[in-house]
Image: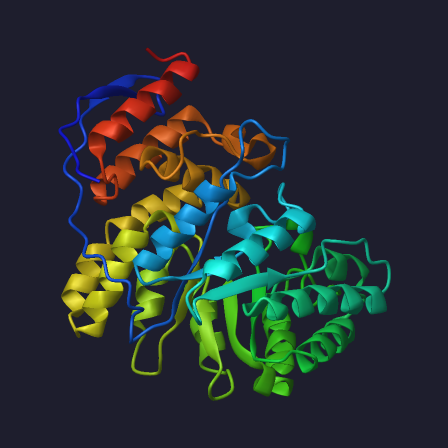
Amino acid sequence: MTATAAESLRLPRGDRSLEAYTPGEPSAFPVRAQPAASRIAFAAAHVVADPLGGPGALDWEATLAFRRHLWAHGLAVAEAMDTAQRGMGLDWPTARELIRRVAAEAPPGRLGAGASTDHTQPRHIADVRAAYEEQCEFVEGTGAQAIVMASRALAAVARGPDHYREVYGAVLDGLERPAILHWLGDMFDPALHGYWNPAHPENLDEAAEVFLEIVHANAAKVDGVKVSLLDAGREVALRRRLPDGVRVYTGDDFNYPELILGDEHGHSDALLGVFDAIAPAAAAALLALDDGDRAAYERILEPTVPLARKLFEAPTFNYKTGIVFLAFLNGHQDHFRMVGGLESARTIVHLADVFVLADRAGLLRDPALAVGRMRHVLALAGIA
């Protein structure tokens, strides 16, 4: 898409004033379909709602087209995850069809998909295990790598760490290939409060010990762990205690540049919702890292961090609204509607801030188009 000159518009600020703003030029990020060599990078992808369908209906072509956009930048796709509104409007029948359709197009080795327990209402530990196994079998049957998601049902019925050990041990043992094991913090889903250690839900140190025990006991079936705690220090500490060959796929949408860069003891790979929004910059930064150009890596990602922190600010679980908003501004979809009406989950001031921060990161690929679409969003909010 060729960018054209953008006009200014008036954006609402936090003090209820309106401020004139004119976007700059987009960054000329290189496009390379070949995956990065130095890091594995998944983008957890959003879904495009069908505005003429029911509350959970998807626009399949627009949804698939966005995955092609991610693959074109060399990123792998993490499908039917939190970013796709799993548990916030995307039910299992739709998620199942989504995984099936995306798997039919995915390049080899470029797709992981979430397996959970959300197609039923388990009341006992054995039910949770069976539900996990059913979804894992389906995911692996499509050729995708299983991403074993945290389960609200397990959080509800588990009475202690032994229940987590029992369920995850059985589920991982039954997999055909090593999976990614997901620890999702309760800032992303309050229903997961106390995961791994329900007797002491505030003690993340004890939870980490249970998590590490499970990984060590099942290391042959764990490709890596996705850590989504927004705590860089805790992630690094976990990373240094994992078995050899088990990766950390950072899910830290605040601190990803430093975690992916790593230190003398190692680095994290990536499985990030923010990579949906910043795919061109993320891919370009990883290309620079492949070339050993740390300065370029940091220069590209540095302006994306304020955008990421705005997208994922509290309440963090509403970050999907900003992700979809940016896809709309950038022409990846024709409307700003979401499954379950979640386009209303953020304020117009928040969306205006996202607009500005995306521009400063060079991520409005056609500023004139973005301004035109932003005007429509402002008009709906009563801002002329």
